[in-house]
Figure 1 (cartoon, rainbow, N blue to C red):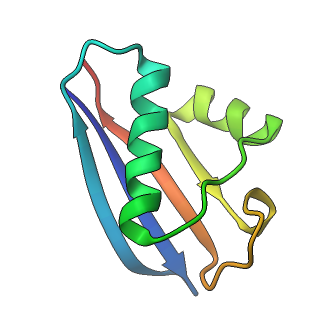
Figure 2 (cartoon, rainbow, N blue to C red):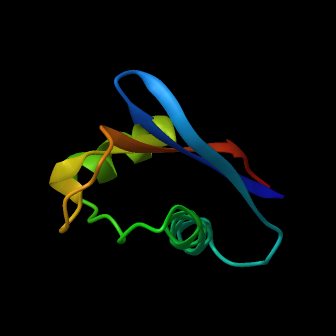
Length: 88
């Protein structure tokens, strides 16, 4: 099972969180993208842009923060963090 934890923070406080589970046979990349899409849908957000720095951080730590620089529209929080908490 693949599980991705999505969290929204403002002023160092957790505002919202959710865990997305995926048991499909997709690749890890597809599972991450599908889970991120579901997190953005649940939180009513636009999809963030994966910058080179965010990709590198995610590859190193299986965790990344999306700040205002990653979103096209203004956001009312400091950052969205995603973290892989379980992999097949």
